[in-house]
Length: 409
Ligand code: AMP
Ligand code: MG
Image 1 (cartoon, protein in one colour):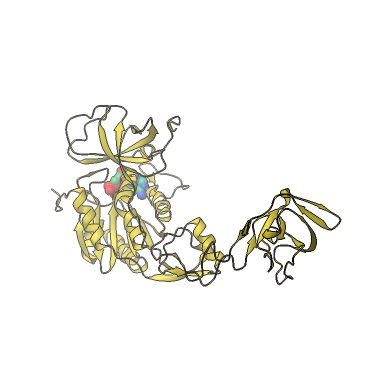
Image 2 (cartoon, rainbow, N blue to C red):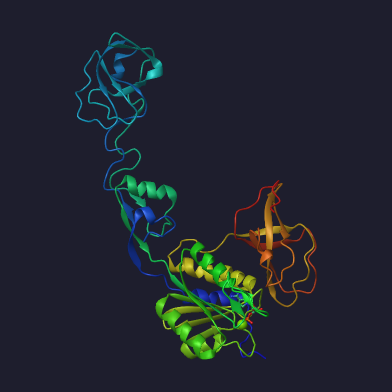
């Protein structure tokens, strides 16, 4: 019997959540800030546009002069400023984005004019303000433009750059140390002796860390040697904010991760009522967090998705660390989940007003192909009855929905 009580998934989530602290902020280059979370309110110190700008190519005029013929007194292209005022009886040829000169209060688009012999005939009278972007219409000076806690998106980079804010304060990204364990592991690309397998979990987890905004730090793979693994766990905890190990957390004679975590810190839980990944182990070591993930690649990735990913997002101050949770209708019968809460990899599509889910097939925790193409984890409560097609079940969306026509691969 395991020394660790098997706790429900919700309880494990609460324990992890209450251990997470947001990381401090740091100054970063705006150009590299996409996806990061602002740690400061950003105010505009300027009006955008800072001058009255023409929105069309045409003629700057005095609106009250109406549909008439005017002398073209000057030409103004974008980037030019301090041009003479427009006087009665004249117009200024003006390009999109150029400052509208004093005197003029409207721009007539070129399509509504006719030019000949240095004169322009206005065929349609303008109203004051036509085709002029007033000062500050896009962003007013002093306005709060982005709040602390905003995840910097693509357009936000544009907002910051238009205001000249080339550096901003963002929460730090967590450094995540990764260690895989097992005498049987060989480096992908190396020859594989009989009885050995390639280390896939560490590389998949490193990609998952990056996707979650973390900075992976690989500690390599460790043989099943208690002292070696304990030393590497210690090194990971020293160098990173979070340590992830893969393997060595079950009941085998050579599973040394739980003892190592116990020696260095406090294990908060060592077993959860969860499939795939019952032996997931969570420990606090000083102010650092350690997750002993199961070795099987699917179990390590699904426990990462459910427990580690939201943790890494919270550390970065992310406003929305949780995936969307929805109700889906299963398209075919699902086998009974048995004694544990099952996070079943599925493909969800939007069809005729409903979210329909179908399984990715055999759910072995070693079968990485059960994750290929999945965009949801369907949550099946413990039970011995199969679930009939048409049943509604909760799911978390881990990727974009498929359209009705697209059945995936
Ligand atoms: P363990 O928890 O160490 O007993 O590992 C459970 C299963 O996952 C065993 O079949 C291991 O060979 C396999 N496994 C462990 N670590 C990895 C890894 N990094 N990559 C792929 N498979 C692994
Ligand atoms: Mg092992």
